[in-house]
Amino acid sequence: MKKINLLIAKEFLIPFIFSAGFLTIFLTIAQIIGISDTLIEISMGFKEFLSVCIITLPSSWLFAIPMSTLLTVFLGIMRLARDNEILALLSMGTSPVKPLLPVFIFSVVMTFFSFFVSFYLYPGSVREVREVIKTLSDNILSKGLPEKIFISSIPDLTFFITASSDEGKSFRGIFVRDNRDKRAAINIYAASGELKNDPKTGISMLNLMDGLIVRPEWDKDKADIIKFKNYSMKITKKDKPIKESRGEMSLGKLWENGHDPNLKQSKKNLFICEFHKRIAIPVGTLLLGIIAMPIAFIFGRTTVTGGVGIGTIIFLLYYISMVFTSNLADSGKVNIMLAIWSPNIILLLFSGILFWGLETNFRFFNKAVRE
Image (cartoon, rainbow, N blue to C red):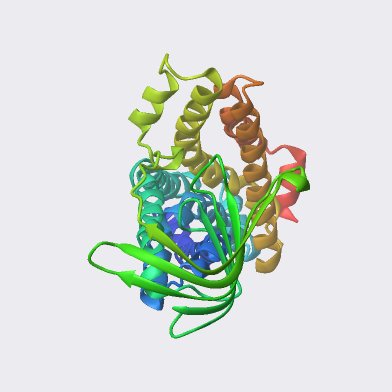
């Protein structure tokens, strides 16, 4: 039996390397695309971009680990079944459930790593990405404003530059939305302008020429329009305190906020939901690894491409159900614990049914193995 376990464990190595590597790269790219507008807006250099890619890795691992665990076990067992090695084991009287030990050990190891990512690495990753983007946003004026994109990384200000020169310090065709005074937000249109920075004080002066200042109103007759030849805007850095997001919080902080009597119930639901998700996803890693084995027996004759497709479909069903139940839990319309844990409960029940079918030589499973 020891040789059988070793044989199965060796089959996991190559599928894990390829699936974990590919999924990490794919999910990291997906996250970068999600914040690409912000990265372009702040004129991020290659070094900073590489730093953000590395920092976002734990966020990618949060879902790459469960999916790679599923694919690794599925492809490994499927390969043995396709080459009739599983059939040889069964012909010697070995129960189809006996090879579960290496599958279980591998799944447990991946689950512990998933817990580590979910509890420690993921919150730090979310926090670091936010801080890097904030730092670069604060320094955007010193780098100059890029052209032909809306820039809104500076609090309460939005810029659009038609054309720029002198490393983003001289402009033609400028639009500014100034919302710093909440009682009287204004739109500014100027033919040209220039940006001057004082690195000592952190104050930047935007000098605009030949333009209009417009204070919009629903009633156009009440709108104020002022023409100007020269207009100077002082832009200072504001270190506004940024509230910690759910993703940045530790489990203890999530639990504390979820039971804070001073918060509205709708807010508390969000924190409790995040708390349960941080635990449920690693547990899902274990269950996905275990359920992959009996499913691999059933689809043993499938090609590698077909196996990857089947494994991906299984994970997507799990992921979609997790997103759906999480949204229900966030809304407070259903019991949070029941909603978040229901995908894992379904996986557990389905795993039990499949293993029971294999162990008792249920007709459907017996046919799938022997054909």
